[in-house]
Image (tube, rainbow, N blue to C red; front, side, top):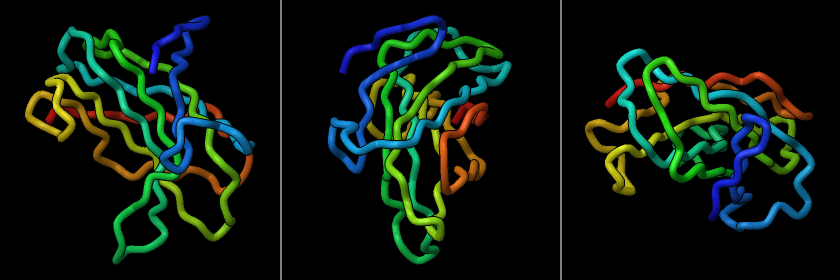
Length: 137
């Protein structure tokens, strides 16, 4: 997956239901990752995902995700993003999450940044201006 900046908006390869294609995608989620004042100044991999949180007693499956490799981050920064997702049933509960991988591992480790609150995604239509605050782990 290759990072291609365009007019301040980060675009990257999007995965829908685990597939690297966006065929049949009819929704766009746009927003910004909000970095805290204690965020490190570095280059990191940013992973933004929409998960199905409909069932409390089951793992939250990834509905769609986008990865922004080699992204410059710093204290108080904003990282604009756009994510393509499929239409979903109105009863399905979706939630947005972010992991900023500072340390370079696949798992969340000390020094990474992570969203720690629920950020609901409306069930229908395009969505603009969803903010994802993250904190240092």
